[in-house]
Image 1 (cartoon, rainbow, N blue to C red):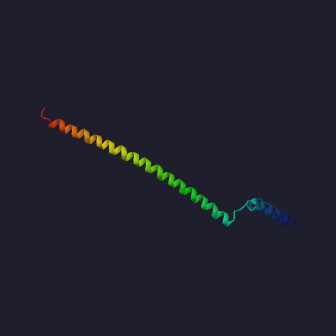
Image 2: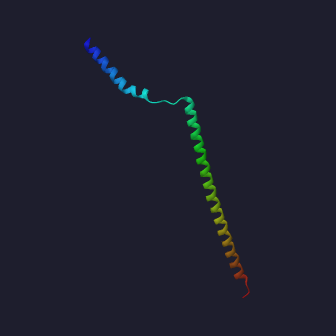
Length: 88
């Protein structure tokens, strides 16, 4: 009988050591959880907006560069045709 109580006491100590600290941690209320989710959503939306703005700028620069390059090549092609058709 004495061994039984020792084993039981040891089991209780082990279970308290494993489970006890988790109950001591502060837990947020559902209201605070919703507030945190709202703040995280707001920050994610801001990040998405910044990424979209950055991508639009990069795309605009690339389109402008491509249009200028195409115009330059068209001008070079026109000059080539003019040189070939010139009666000199």
